[in-house]
Image (cartoon, rainbow, N blue to C red; front, top):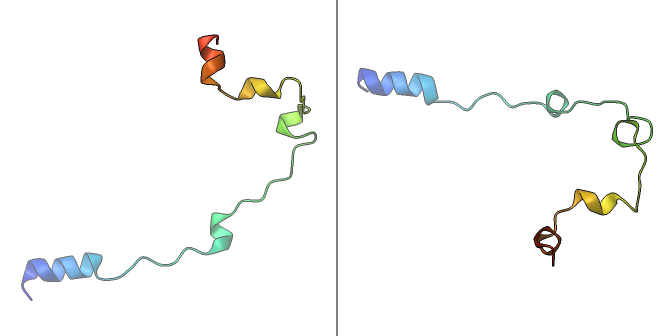
Amino acid sequence: MDSSAAVRQARFGQLPERTRYEDMVEAKPAEPGGRAGSSYNPEGSWNFFSCLAVDLGL
């Protein structure tokens, strides 16, 4: 092995250590009432979705 191959092998020759599931998950208590205290309004829920026909006024 020449020196550049040895350097490459030393740097990239092994996979990184495995990340545990516990280190990837963060548990938070739920907010009371859903989205930061706001209540669900079925009449106004359509405002959160985009519709091309509505945007064009059709």
